[in-house]
Image (tube, rainbow, N blue to C red; front, side):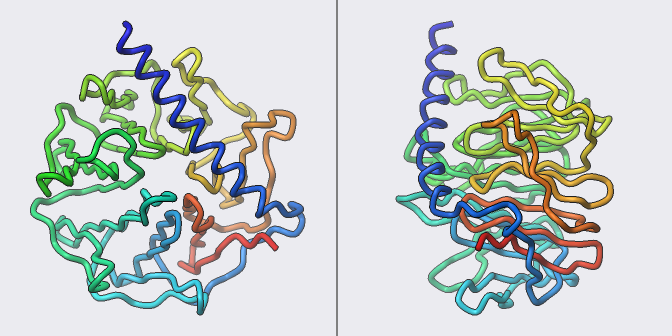
Length: 306
């Protein structure tokens, strides 16, 4: 019990420190809601991933693109991927970029050569976030293979360690790792026990931000994790959503019509802020590199805060 309380305390403290930084950062970007809008960026993508400074995307033929903030355009990078994950950047380290190839090969982006280097193993899903617990995990890089087995990258051994359990979806943020299994059960990775522990509830999607965890159930209803009770609590029950994402750039959702919604959990009286744009099919919220969307025609948009 003492170790569990210590873990909760340490996790809350790490979240609070990260949140304080994000509040300072966000203060510099405050703009009236009416002035904020999504601007189209040249190009077409099937996936976009945003971190602290880096934004990568996957083209319609598995091409890899890296966003150049100077030219405000995506530039093709050598390689062919079906999925890309970006994250883990902080004041002391840059983002990590990982990808999965057409046959499940694992790739890590080399900033020196500006190419993707293959890493041993195969995965069906990969995520990356900031590591805050030990030197062998400066980033939390996690993956699931086709058999739903769980793997965590070890920077000391330079390989993936298998973690006990079975999951169909995994998410990380703020040093925290969460997952869902094939029965929609919810799991949280305990850094002290080095194992996944079940959390009450049932979700089909899960998203981890800098200081909170969100999810959607099978009825497209939204839930927010209450750390004081260690339970997921229904949030804004009158609305239904098809996708939820969370990051340093906020908590965002899409509904069945592709309408974008931003959550404001710190101020329940204003609960949601709506942005224009129907037909969006995917959204990605980074930890400083912005909020990005792709519409049903694979056109790309970025949130502009004047």
